Structure formats: structure tokens, C-alpha cells
Image (cartoon, rainbow, N blue to C red; front, side):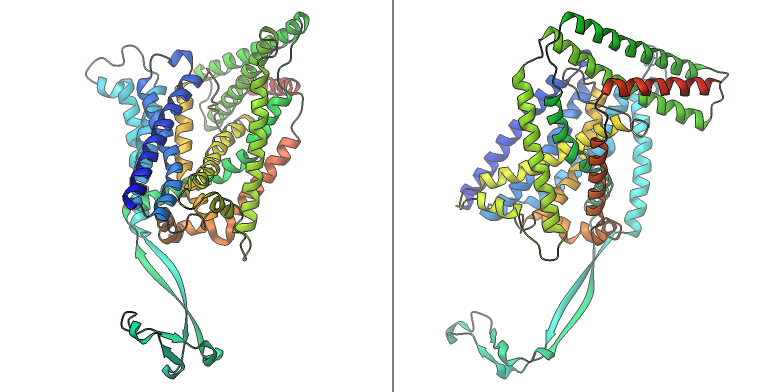
Length: 520
């Protein structure tokens, strides 16, 4: 039976791995930009490996649950350790190197001469990666030297009683087999004889687990911020894409809208040229204020260009494709309604299971009811689906924030047929850095369903009790932070102007005025 269970789990792992790889390849083909269709093979391989690792980590959760329930004997602790090591290497070394490699702007003669190894595209990327790795390694080493122990608070009760108030295990022949245990007659023990005591148990954490804790600690800030935004924005934006879907327009309407889009494009082009002139102006004072101003303007321009591309694409669909395929937009509506239900149930799960003293299992009961005896596939799929949804919310959150507050974050959107590899790599890094917090968040919320799993032991007995890590969970601070961000997101989306074109025109005029003031 154990061998059959192990064989079924191994088959499931292989099948899901193939599905994930095929899905990642299709994503690269569907979203990839035509300019990157032939080249950029190394960034593509890194992107494929990163998304595969992230999705495989999420799917390892139901695998861990099934392994513990079926007793298949898979060493999930070793599997989770391998996953965490791979995530750390990808986040710290491989993805940054691929990103710097792709964005390195070198001249045709840069790869020639004695210093070609350090002046070429690969050499430049290696320099940036080595610097980042050294800085991260020093910080990590110092933190591990001073904070390598987990302190666990223990509590116990001690009762004083006379052995005369106990009776031996019945039948007497089982006393020896039971180790001479006794059954307590609780009614004969005075309640006042109970003493409560507390203490602390300190244990050393391995360096690999500590590295995973650091990555998780950093990722929690991304997760709290971006996932909270995405839980609101992802379903609402999908529904709004159906509400604002392109409609068939006449030639006159198309010509009018095309002129308006052209004016916006001309204004953005003039602003970009002015920004480039300021950067190359040798007479202009190079100060931190000017550099920060240029960076903010550049991020604003990139955000407005993304809006302009979207409006241009919708304009072409409205006229040339007669409004587009309605099936696509109804599919987005259904996906938005499904996402809205997932976001609502996640919110309820947090409220009824994490905040109150008397916890309501809620989704834990759903997963356990779907897991039939001997066939837990439906429960595992639902568990994995809820976990995967959080990763999608993180990606949505960073893109939404980049468009709304472009001076805080550079935009790396993922658009069908128009996604450059630097955007792929950025979202790969974001997905990986949020993967460990997503796993931990799911383990915390679904602790009843994921009971006796290896990953719960890793997070529940080691990482959670590191001193710097407990500050996130002190008095449920992370929950209230997520709720506050959700509330701000709802307010921002409700107050969002309906006329996007008018809003953009106003912003462009403000940007032009700021440029004129800066030049003066």
C-alpha cells in the first residue's frame, strides 16, 4: 500500500512538472515581444526555470499534505530544503545576473581587447551580480553570526497527586506492554494542586534554513504590500475590462480617437526628448535632486506610455476587429467573478481563523471535505488553487502600483505579444521572492488541513521563532497591515476617475509645466 501511494505521488509530480513546463513555455510564446522571439535564450531559460520553481513550490504544498496522509514515505524535508536552496540561488545570483545581462548596453567594440571579459555584456552583468552578492553575503553572515538561534516559549502544568488515586491499566496483562502507565482518576485530584510554569527552549538554526528565513523575511514586505493590492485589483480590473471592452465604431469616430491618441503620443515623445537632452546636457548641474527628478519623470513617462499602448490597442480592436472576440471578454468577466469570490473567501479566512482566539477552520473544512478517503485529489487541487491565486495577486499588485504611483516603481508590465525579457525577469524575481511567504501564509491559514506536514515543521518550529522574524507576527501586525493596504486600495479604486483619457491629458500638462519650471 505504501509503495502504491509513493508511486502515485511520484507519477503526480512528474505529470504536474510536465504541465508546468508546457504552461511556462506557452506563456513565453504568448507574451513575448517579437524582438525577443529569436534571441535572448539565456534570459528565457532563467525565466522558465524561475516560474517553474515558483509554481512547483506552491504545488509541493498539496504533495506534502498527501504524503503525510497516505504515509508514502517521501522525504519532504529534503525536498523543501532543495526548493529553498534553489529559490535563494535564483533570487540572489541567477535572476539578477540574467537581468543585468539583458539590460547591459554595450557598444559593438566592447567585447574586444584585453579587458573583453569585464567590458562585454557578460562581464558587465557579472560585475553587478558580484557586487550584489558580496553585499548580501556580508549582511547575511553578520546576521547569522548574531541571530542564529530560535527561542521557543514553552508552558506546562504540574499537578501533585498521590499514587493511591491512580489505578493500573486494565486488563492487567497489558500493564507491561504499556510501560506500567496509570490511568488518572481526575475526580480525586484537587484543582488547587495545579501549577502553571513557563520557560524557553533555544535551538540553533542551520545556515540553509536561516538563508530561507532571510529571503522569506524580505519577501514578506513585498507580499504584504503587493498581495494586498492584488487581492482587490485583480478581480476588479478583470471585471472592468469587460465593462470597458472595445465596441464597434464608425470611420468618423475612429479618425477622431486616432487624432487624440496621436496628440498624446507626440506630447510623450517631446517630453522624452527633453528628458534625454537634460541627461546629456553637460552644463546642467549633476546633483542628487536632478537625478531623482529625472528618474521620477522617466518612470512617469513609462507609465503613460503603457496606458497609451493599451488605448491604441483597444482603438484598433474597436475599428479593425469590430470590437474583438466577445468570448474573450466574457471569459475575463467570469475570471473576475471567480477572483472576487477567491478574494472574499481569503478575507473571511483571515478574519475567522487568524484573528479570533476561538478559531473557525472555514476553508480547512472545505479542503478536508473535498479530500475523500483514499482520494484526496479534489482537496489538494483546491488547496493548490487558493495558494496559486496569491502569487497572481502579487504580480498584479506590483503592476497596479507601478501604474498608479510611477515615481515609486519602474513599470515592467506583462502584455500579450509585447513583453520584453527584462519584464519577464523582473516578474520572475518578484514571483520567487514572494513564493516562500506565500507558502508560509498558506501553512498558517490552513494549519488544520496541512497538519503533520514537513513544511509546517520547518516554519512552525524554526523560522517563526527567529527574533527578527517574530516582529512581523507580533500581535498580528502583518494582518492589520494587509487590511490597511486593502482599504487604501479600495478607496483609491473607487475614487479613480472614469475618463482615463482626460486624466492622462491633465497629467501630461502637469508634467510639461514641471519640465518648463525645471529648465528655467
